[in-house]
Length: 144
Length: 96
Image (tube, rainbow over all chains, first blue to last red; front, side, top):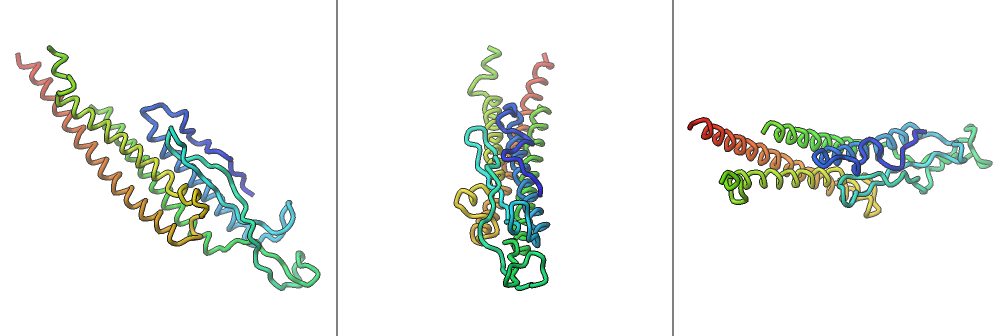
């Protein structure tokens, strides 16, 4: 399972110098979306994992983010496990089947994960564009 | 005398404040884009779970990208004007 850092480590917004703060803001957005895509990839990879080290089937992971109040940007506040139960499938031959022959599958809906992945990708691209615009504006300022 | 040329009421000061204003605007847009999904998380909703919320994110993103393009154009235009203003001042200094 991929381990996602609790806070954004790519570009800490608080440590970015004033002139380049705008790049730090977009960088934090890129890091947040990257973490989101990592979690989604993890969910899809484990969509049929019925046994984990913690016991029971794999649980869907979601990344939560919050705005950085003064510096601007976004920070990853945590990775939450979705507690909702997964589908119960009758499969008596499965090694993880219970006494009645039912297997509890992960609560991962691959279609929803794919849609989430598309949204995360679009937001990542938007952040990359904002980064590019900020960089171009800085270059313009240096040309004066 | 020379300082008056670059005073608060000069064209240079106006253009410089225009550049600063657009830079701040760009920073705000970048912040909004970076937090495009944070708002959903604050509401206790994850993207993809609520189609209306996801659509709102998309709409907000589109508007932010339009504003971003607008800001960049304004910044570029203002910087070109400032460059020209400095260029004219340099020419005036050369022509004694």
